[in-house]
Length: 219
Image 1 (cartoon, rainbow, N blue to C red):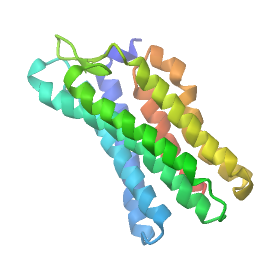
Image 2: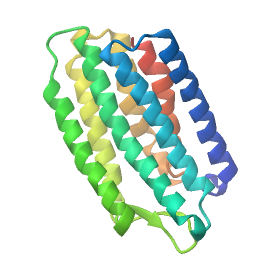
Image 3: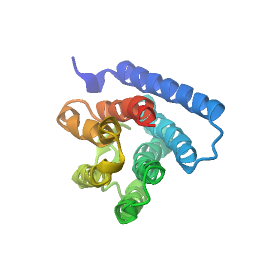
């Protein structure tokens, strides 16, 4: 079965992930007065994940038709840009979550991750015009750019920094909390080999699974 050619399967998986995240977003906003910085950031994290998933969905839905070029570019921006913002929001969610448990918080790693993601975001904007990271081929379908390997490198680097933030504060977190928070980075890294045969779908689903289960359990 060629997962990359099964458009309906991929769109269906993304839409399911969007509905699950939307349900948690509504439930979180309704059940928790967003007074805590952590809750505010968590709600933003859920909203951004929905935007990212919508972008991924758009790449499949609008692909195959050059008349949809503008919509494909918007989808690329949502998919890649939203993913970068997701990492930043996750890092600051960690910061606020850990701050509620200890005063000894290593903020520098969070800020470093945010700076790297800032550069990453700029590269994404540039790529919308010169297609160095990603683009659209002559058939109107999404395609990786010549420097797409930078996407994988930056994804792994920022995830490793996020893991280091959790590990460096493990004493302030329970074992369950530490493992739960680490899964945000471990799951996307673990599915990297699958990306060789199935584009970004497993990565997005893995991230969604973490957000909708592990992070909330860590509370």
